[in-house]
Length: 256
Ligand SMILES: C[S@@+](CC[C@H](N)C(=O)[O-])C[C@H]1O[C@@H](n2cnc3c(N)ncnc32)[C@H](O)[C@@H]1O
Image (tube, rainbow, N blue to C red):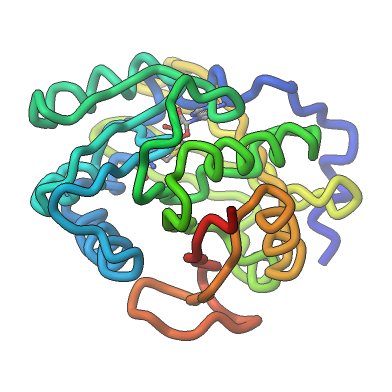
């Protein structure tokens, strides 16, 4: 199926992420809870060797749902995100000892003091320009101490087309959520347009757009950024990554 055809003329704004993670995001992703994130955080902590006394950054922490579990490891935690709305939700659920900062992942105002950096739930590949995506990876590497470790949970482009539901309508907590998804193979991106309604009144429309990288492409990009991929999993049960995998979960270390 050519999932691109009917959407060929739709333009994605360069800064789509400035709107997409606002007040409607917690409505659309209400099922992405602290409980759902807990086993993901445990897996990420185990695969990176997170331990008490480590400094760790949850890059693009959103509402802090992984940080809640990571707080149990006795590490010194920081969450960074661009969305003021999601950071304020995070602040309410996290301990005062967990630092939260508003920052763009391309320009993190943080020193090279972290033992571990986490990137959960497809929080990468947002920029239309490949140089900006590289800049985000360079920042992940830069804020790590020598040999510091990274964790990145990304989508698997090889199974995406088969899994993609082009259109859906669902109800959640009194809201009606319409989602339209398509792959733009030319731009190598998967896009989603989301409209939320309540009581027949449209509350807003947001767009999401993520760059599709094969394992080889993402490994090469991370290598250019100074990060060496050491393992690739296909899901949070620890299955080895393969073409049909649900996810592409990478861990490794800073090379310099
Ligand atoms: C898919 S959400 C994941 C959030 C969180 N990791 C989770 O699993 O719930 C992506 C996150 O990236 C943040 N984000 C988007 N663009 C960003 C940017 N340029 N710099 C920093 N954070 C950004 C969003 O605000 C959002 O919280």
